[in-house]
Image (cartoon, rainbow, N blue to C red):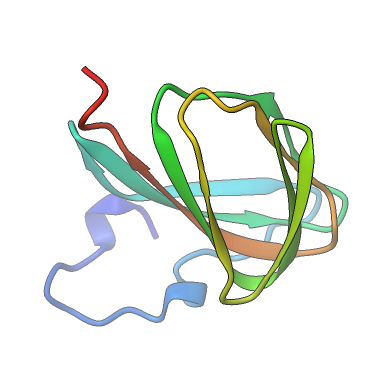
Length: 112
C-alpha cells in the first residue's frame, strides 16, 4: 500500500499497513507534509538501520515486536506499544532484534 492508497477519514489497522519482506527493511510514508512526515517500517529478523542523526525530533513507536534503539550511545529496548522521542541531532541507530514494525513521526517545525 503506498501513500496514494491511504484513505483519509477512514480507520486503518496500523500493523496491516506494511508487511514483512524476507531479509529486508521496508519503509512506507503514509503522510508527508512540509512540516514533517509519518512513516511505517517493517524489519525482518537480523535487519537494522545504521547510525544517523536528523535535525528534527523524531517520535519512534513500536507497533509489533520489540527493537533496540541506541540514542547517543544509550540502548533502549522498546516493545509493542512503547515509544521514545529521539532528540534532534542525536546520533541513533536500530540494532537487529527479531522482526518488528514501527512508526516514525518527524516534526520539522520549530527548527528553522
